[in-house]
Length: 290
Image: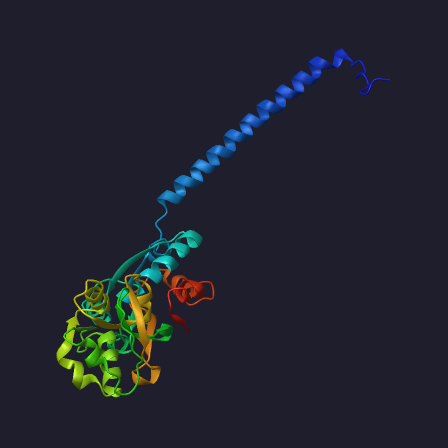
């Protein structure tokens, strides 16, 4: 017996009838498809002509973020993941926190402020420029002493440690202690450890921590005081030692939604940055996640 049985003979008298039914069904399907297509086109036209309100339009906007320059690398990682998962992007403005606070006060449009230190966030909060119930402690950092990666320098930081002697005729790069949080922390630490007076005339003042780091990488300063995350981001420098946490005010980044933000994506973005999903992106850059 063959593997497959031969098909039985069909009643050929029924073929014209079946062909007629098939043709009728095809014609009906064509009409139905045309009706459905017309309905979809009408709905699409109605959607285009419908005036969306401000809240509906806002949800499709990129989030405008003012962030301290020390967060650039970590936020780029986080923003790329946010865009991939949510389809919304960010427009970033980086700089020194006091400068960004002044720009917010001057009316420059933004949705989110991420500040280093408490003073800049306090500044905008006192002027009612943030939504106070959205202010959160975000990240922490450490203060370190750095040198060029090829430097043989070795120091242990403690009370009256010999920083001046190690500098010799060299310079100590620091952010401006009169205005920039990293500089204020550095000066406070040196004062508390009893060495500020001995090195004050050797300080090379930089406009921010990244500029201080650059002075070290170029060999224009023998040592520098920057945040741990800034140091870890640059392979041309090495961390000589870390400052004791009690020697300076804690380095804390805070985040808040600005009072004038109407972007519906903004709360989603802020909650994402504060979520466990984003934690590894900041921890790998050396930040402490609160």
